[in-house]
Length: 412
Ligand SMILES: Nc1nc2c(ncn2[C@@H]2O[C@H](COP(=O)(O)OP(=O)(O)OP(=O)(O)O)[C@@H](O)[C@H]2O)c(=O)[nH]1
Ligand SMILES: [Mg+2]
Ligand SMILES: [Zn+2]
Ligand SMILES: [Zn+2]
Image 1 (spheres, rainbow, N blue to C red):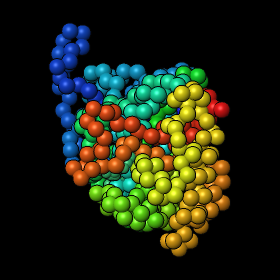
Image 2: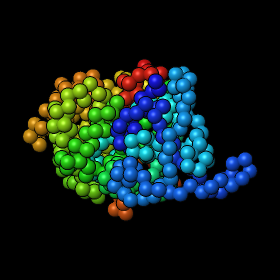
Image 3: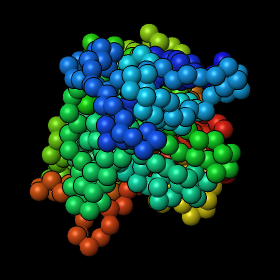
Image 4: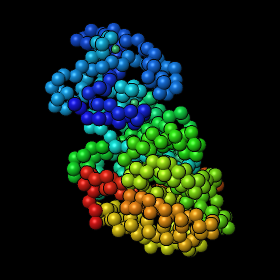
């Protein structure tokens, strides 16, 4: 018996000793000094069905795994193609034949979903989150935060998506552009290791186009990954809150994008959770994106930024402050309850409902991926010679890892 792997593409589980291998023979290889035979591409029904495509791909075969390996724990290693004899290390899911990182086959993965409506800020958030983890993760003994080199094609490798996003935000000062709508979301796969516990995990984020979270049919499809997620990060657009919008508009501060109403996302989620009550046992981080807009207009918005005066305190202390998390969450909650009732009592009621249903498994977070608003050129509004400063973006993920346990996150 091996360990059970949850495929981040098709969400089927499989025993890791049932993994398949895809031939990597590009015919320039040699075996014992002699060129190998070429290995023709073929139609791969499973892969094509998954992506709803008609492409030719390299042969997929089953590696031979010995009795003792099965018994003592399987460590994936190079296997010989049953068609051409070349040796390959490209491990694929037996159900959909998508390529998965080798170490994930050995150790499994934890799926954390990031969901939210169109233009709520998901893509920019993911890029800023990884950037900050690579920069500061070591403060909490998290290391090797590595975007993976697997995917349908090189453009879809997490590393490529991340590098492109990082360049856009941190170098060109331009937000990441809109995510294309696809029949299946492309998972962002990262490796992260805890130095303290030596636990290595693969985090899988789904950066779905926000539209997917609006249409009931699509929600059904998303259901599959929400259900299998160990934790969920819900991105809610601060700029879509009518109270905030009205005040900022009166100051001539407007966001260029059409926001998804905060309530629309919450309603969709609430309906879904009511039908799938086990979700209330899953940690949910409710993330208010674009929080820079609140902080820089605190007086007009009558928001008490006391708990938001500094970035994540662990950056200076090396300890994750649960108090800072709780105080920030409380402040957002009470602000909702006291200020947003102008839009009927919906917001206060919603905040109440969340804690009523999720209890200690829910928190509110205020984060800013870009650290500032965008200007009329659609660029991030900071001087060219200054660096982009994301704010509090790591907190939701660290809180979730702390809730899930096993990562040895030092807390205070
Ligand atoms: N002020 C401010 N604006 C932001 C921030 N993050 C994102 N935005 C704005 O929100 C827009 C949408 O952000 P995205 O990250 O593309 O949103 P998304 O949820 O991925 O959108 P879809 O891909 O359409 O689903 C950006 O183009 C920015 O204008 C932030 O931290 N602060
Ligand atoms: Mg996006
Ligand atoms: Zn699969
Ligand atoms: Zn082959």
